[in-house]
Structures are given as structure tokens and as C-alpha cells.
Image 1 (tube, rainbow, N blue to C red):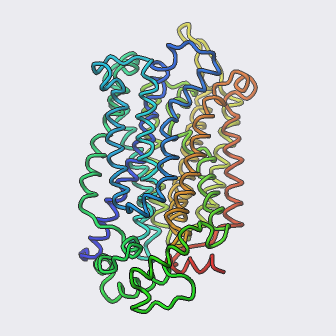
Image 2: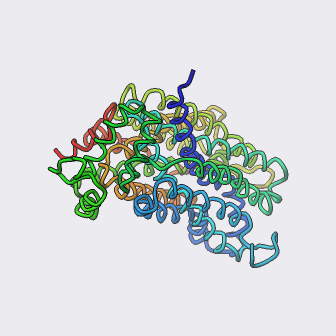
Image 3: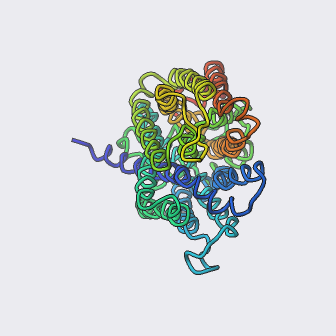
Length: 508
């Protein structure tokens, strides 16, 4: 039988993870619309190949501009508005973006009369949604880490990644279901709108549930609301343990050497202490900030969101038709979910570093071999008078698909969930909001670079003639090796340590 405290903790965690679900949903919904956006917004302009590829990459990745803005502003929002209210802002932005991306002509022309000239309006709505994603990507793991007991914190924060991949899998099913309602011509004109509009449902649910949950105990302490912090801690940990945790939290919000007596821990004293330290992002040295930024950067430079955003396009490169390519993304989503569950089960048992190193090696092998499979086996053939890509044999096609699934498995058991676990843990209390904002902002900038450049790398006639669509995958494989070495050399193990214990590591 589940205790009341455990049920309460689960309720808070599931509410926060809806931010992760919308993170996955919003970023992956674009995968089903890549070819439609090109047909609807790009092709009518008749640009040159390079210009068209660049603009197409910008339209597909435009939400990432907002993600950078949302992530970088998340530090200030989490500090002055709060973790919960910050997530509520994100939920409202998701709603606006879902409606506006589906109907960019809204308030300008009658619904359904948009054309390629509305590309800027579409990009603006996607950026708005991206701001919501950026906020949620930072605040959801932050919220969970600040309510979770140390012994299961890794598992609970990993549930946020499970929610992300669940959102990705759900939207893959939604996109595939919508694609079955009509032919490509209908999909390019109408179907892509329904894909974006479908996000209204989870965004509305997220908004409602956020009205029912409290702030985190550490944010309450930050603002001097110790009674509220104790109330939340008691419901999760029991009163006796809550007193210990509350004292420990208050100590980390006071300057070094301060005695935390009843008088010293008063709100004016604590606010003065925060004023003395809050402006210094590097109060605990440069190493913790740099390590966080590199973890975030590597998570994207290994190429995961190329697969998430461009999977249907990649499968079409392999010779699949539109509906088959969208169906293939469902298998990607299922593998992503299953191996994320593996990470949830093992992250508090085996530790963070072993999973990250093993995952990096698996991804390097998968991406490197995939590049060679494209290089040696992909051929351009004539089918019904149209030139299309096909693998030289069924074995080669099956091998390429298997390698993509192997890569997804390697990421899902390691760099997907565990990066967020580490980023939510390694930063000290006084700088956690701002430091996590810097790391998350770095992650989204890296994501933007990778997502924007992939169409250029993958569709460049020069590179295709020489490397046959293999170049990009070799690059991502090499970066995966570098990422594994980086974790091995520079990242501390955080398993089974409280957030306050980890802070002492950086003081040393």
C-alpha cells in the first residue's frame, strides 16, 4: 500500500514531468511536418539549393531560438517568480504556440487562407513555443530535484526524461494517425496544421495541474517562507526528517561561517546573505559551471535531435515512402522509451558516470557504422521515372535501421536522462537556478546549431557526391567518443549524495 507521503511525492513529480512531456511533444511534432513545411513555406520561393536548405533548416529549428531564450531567462524566472509559476508560464506559452503554429494566419486572414508568405508568422509562433520548451526543460528537473529525497532523486529526475520520450512517442503516433487521413497533397496543405494543433490537449492538462501543486521547499526557504517549506518537507519525509533537511537547506543559503541560529536564520539576515552572494555565478569556482555547460553541449552535439526532428527525412533517404517513414519513427519512440526505463531503474544503483560512458561508446559505434552503411550501400535509382534513394540490399536497409535503433538505445540509457540528472544535482543551492539556466541555454544553442546544419550537411550536392549521406553521422560518432572521455575525466559521481553534500565537493 502506497503511503500518503509517497503518493504526494508521486503527484508532485508527475505534474512536473508534464513539462517534460510537452518538451518532447513540442520538439518532436516537427518531425511529421518537415516535408510539408518545405512544400508549403519553402518551395514556392524558388530559392537556390543552398538558400532553400538553409531556410528550411531555420523553419524546422526555429523553435530552438525560443528554447535558448526560455532557458537563459529561466534562472531569473525561477528565482524571482518561482519554479511552479515559471512552469505555469511555460504551459501558457505551449497553448499559444500550438494554436498559432497550426493557424499562422490567425487575426490576419480567415483561417485556412495562409500561404508561404506567412512563414515569418509561423516562425514567431514556433519561437513562442520554444520559449515554453526552454523554461520547462530547465524548471521541470529543477522542481523534481528540489522536492526529491536523495536516495531516489536520480530515479525521480529520470522520470522527467521518461516523460520527454513519452511525449515524443505520443506525437509520433499522432503524426502517423493524421498522415493516414489523406495523401501527401492533403498532408502538405492541411495535415501539418492538425499535428501542431494536437498539442493543445496536453498543454491544457499541464496548466490545470500546476494550479494544484506547491512551490519547492528550497524556493520557500530562498524567500524566507520556512513554515511553508517545512510543511512540504513534512508531507514528503515526515516531521523529524523534515527538520534536519530544513536546517541543512538554510545553512546553504547563508554565507560561509554564519551560525544558523534562530536569529541568524531570520528572513532579513538570510536576504542579506543572499545579496552578498547571489550576484556571483562563479561563487563556487569556474569548474562546476564549465562542466555543466559541456555536459549540456555534448548531449546535443552527439546528434540526438537530428534523429528526433529529421527521422522521417532520414528514413526517406533510405527509400521509405511518407507513411512508412512516419511509421518507422514509432519504433524509434518505443526503443527510446524502453531504454529510458532501463536508465530509471539503474541510475541510482550503478551511478551516473558508468551509464554516460557506456552510452557514449554505444552511440559512437552506431553512428560510425551507420555512416559507412550509407556511404557504401545507398544508391539512387529510377522508380516510375522518378529518381529515389534505395539501399543496395534488404540487408543494408535493415542494418541501417537497426543501427539507428541502437544509437537511440545508447542515448536513452545514458545521455538522455542522466545528463538532466547531473545538471539538476551538481550546482550548489545559491546558484542552482542561474547555473542551470546557463547550462540549459548552452544545450539549446548546441541543439539549434545541430538542427540547422543537418539539412545543409545531408542535402549538399557536394557532400552527397563524396560521402553519400554518411558525413554527418561520422561527425556525431566522433563527438560521442569525446563526450565519453570528458565524463570519465572531469565529471564527479553524484549517486546517493544530498544536494547539500554535493555543494561541499565544489568548495574543496
